[in-house]
Structure formats: C-alpha cells, structure tokens
Image: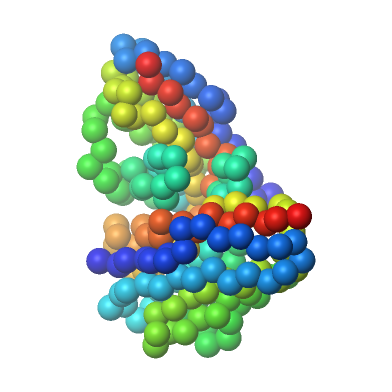
Length: 118
Length: 116
C-alpha cells in the first residue's frame, strides 16, 4: 500500500514571498504519478501540478514548481511570488500506473493549510 | 472545458429522506468518481465508474447507491442516511483508456450534505 505524508499541517507566507510545501511518499512501484491539488475555502479541488515518475525533469506551471527526488521519495511544491489567492489547503497525492481496479485510486496526504498574509 | 458540475450545492435531509446528488462533465471522460470529504481531511474514495460500469466500491454502506446513466452523468442516491454521513461529497472525472484511468482527475465543486 502507498502512503503519502505531509509533515506541515499549517504554513504561512508573506505576499510576494516564496514558500515550499513538503511531501514524502512510500511505494514499491517504479511507475506512478504525483500531484498537488489545491482546495481553497470555496472548496473546489483544483489540480495545481503533476509529475510523471519516469520524467527526471521537474514539472513547472507558472509560479508553481516541484522538486521531485525519486530516490528520496520526495515531492515538494514551491510557490513563488505568493498571492492572496494561493490561500488554500494543499494536498499531495499519489497514483499508481497499472491496469486493474486499483489503478484508479488517488492516495492523498493529510494536507497543508497555507495562509498568504498581506 | 475542464469543468465538472455538481448539484445541488447544499443539501439538508432527514434520516428518513431519499435524495440524489448529481454530477455532470462534458470533457469526454469515461471514468467518474465519488469521494466523501470530512472537514479538514483529505477526500476518501467511495466509487469509481469506468465506461459506465462500476469498477470500484470501497466498501461503502448500501444507503449510498451510485448510478451512471451515461458517459457524462453520475448520480449518487441517498437513503436512510446517518448524521455521521454529513460531509462534502465530491465528484471527479478523468480519461479512461482500455479500462484504465488516466492520471488527471478533475473535481467538481462538491455538494455540502447535512443529515439531521
């Protein structure tokens, strides 16, 4: 079974600053996907960024980037130039990649509540 | 269009009521999911449909009954719920290929359910 650990229950950052959210995972799989989802107080779960395990290059999406360390099983999210709209719960998630019923399941971490302070 | 819609946004129901939650997507996705989310917790998977067939039921009580009438629509029928079933119910969809789900799941805004 996979586990995803987010060790920071809450974090805060000043507007325009940079913040890094941590995520580690445990798996015996070699082929998988990792995601960061954002859930603002409005509650819609939004996909922020994804990473395929077979890709060595770290994914980036505008102000969001990841530091993917496969050997260390670490997948941190860096938010640059933080904005008030980044205030949200951030979930790290893992998905295996193989056929069969189990392939559909996202395993979520417990989340990190990020507050951006004006 | 990466939109998943859910209705209603809020629902209050008694323990003897029967109600339904609705989810719709028009992205051509053939895998659809129901999740239950309690406050300050991550979503918990309930059901997965792939090509309109139920492929995963995560040991959900029978008072929750999913239905997938077509490739765009997913329902969750509720009957004789308990107060502990009060939660945010999220629907998601993703591509599915040869019975496997592709990796990106897109979530709807959720239905906030309160059971009195």
